[in-house]
Image 1 (tube, rainbow, N blue to C red):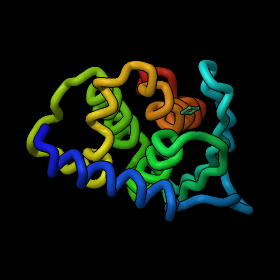
Image 2 (spheres, rainbow, N blue to C red):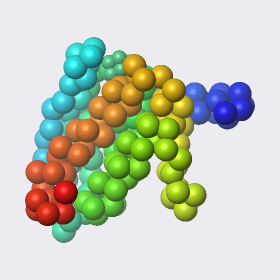
Image 3 (cartoon, helix red, strand yellow):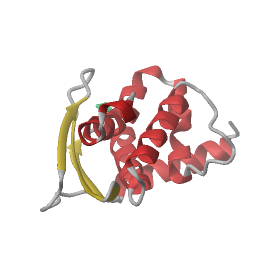
Image 4 (cartoon, helix red, strand yellow):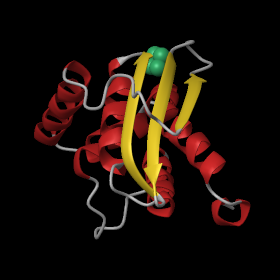
Length: 149
Ligand code: FES
């Protein structure tokens, strides 16, 4: 990765960390999931509101490093307006990204792309995936068995 791109990605991550999107509590959420990162004890609480199979709102609160909190900010931003299957697919793509798998060119990851360098730092992967694991857990509670397998 060029150092310019590296710098840009770092700026995007810090912007989400310092100005988190969708941080806060929701009064009328349909699902609430709490999860922690077992390696450091940092936590996230994710809330989602689902209407007609679409994620209409998603918010989070938590304690964690810049990677985990910026990832939560990006994730909540990215899944809004998506149906549950597409939200789950995005989570699979993100999981691949964390294993160094390049996403299909046709997929526009937006700010999420800034986290792709995390795959080079195995100790931080659990930070980046914390919010996504919380989202998967929440969606699995909402989706019929056969659609999640
Ligand atoms: Fe705890 Fe990153 S160090 S989530």
